Image (cartoon, rainbow, N blue to C red):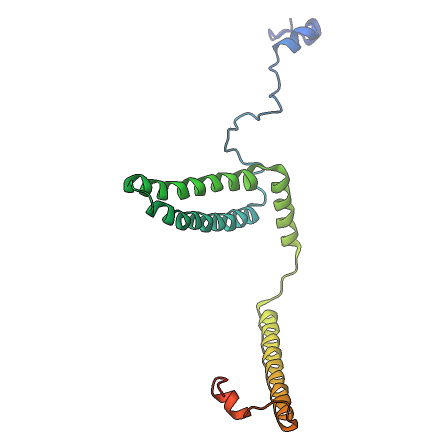
Length: 183
């Protein structure tokens, strides 16, 4: 023993020390986890929430579709209270099951979570355009579409007049343009 009443590390056997150490946690389950533990919870949160929100909206639309599809089947049923319960319960169960699957994919699947984290990292690297640049580009696109539409309309009218004069078309151009297409 040393003067401070501590055992000398050289006096102990290595096997005795190894026997007193706790076993490392099993790789199957991490300590302090549970069925709702999120994989890498502090990373990729923006992309995860956006993905989960979009998938939840699609799931809600799916539950609405299931609800509407059950109406004809429930109308034919003679037991109205059971039909009503089924009509509301099936879409709710569908929606809750979809939310759980979304959580499993977006929150716990290592491959998907790592992909979403990498996606958010790439999004942060992008040099986004300024509001002024976006406004200018939008004006150019709108002007180009209006100009192209006008040019196509004028070319169409030109060909209508040309083919009417040649005798291929037997219509009155002004009447067909301004009377809703009725001769």
